[in-house]
Image 1: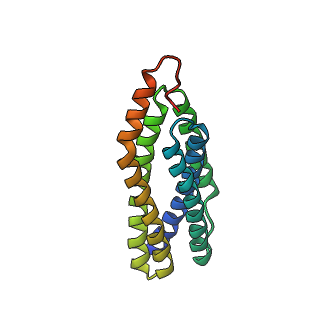
Image 2 (image 1 turned 135 degrees about the horizontal axis):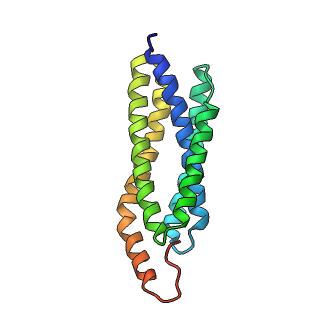
Image 3 (image 1 turned 90 degrees about the horizontal axis):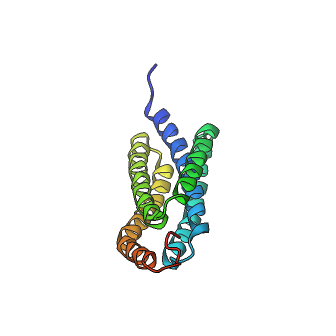
Amino acid sequence: MTTTANDNLNDWLRDAHAMEQQAEKMLTAQAERLEHYPALRARIVQHIEETRGQQRLLDECLTRRGISNSIVKDLGGKLMAFGQAVGGMTTSDEVVKGAMAGYVFENLEIASYTSLIAAAQAVGDTATQAACEQIIVQEKAMAAWLLEHLPEVTQAFLARAEQPGVTAKV
């Protein structure tokens, strides 16, 4: 059986929807635990709202294309995010590893939307292309912010970690 470009685009849109579900859960769990890193927390909270907007854009793309999101993929993404959140809570350097993981995840999203833009172009779906182009700008901005602020987060963690009786991880 041959898979068409439209079939692939539809599958990748479902994947992106699940990815954004995972991102929202992961970011929300991280933001809820951050106490001593206000700039990081504020940027994560901002990106949670962006992520919700991205989900709405993807929902519109799916609806316009006459397909539904994959409940299995969405659930899998949420479970993965839960596992990441629980795993991060057990590390003493959670804030640093969380910031690094966030940067990596943003780059995964950038790669995904880069492919989605190309696929939408290939099938002539300009509305999906425009939605993905709007989303990728936000993902690139978040990745750039995380990379720029990772030294600051790391140094703040190290300074807190050296203070007796002070919690540094979040």
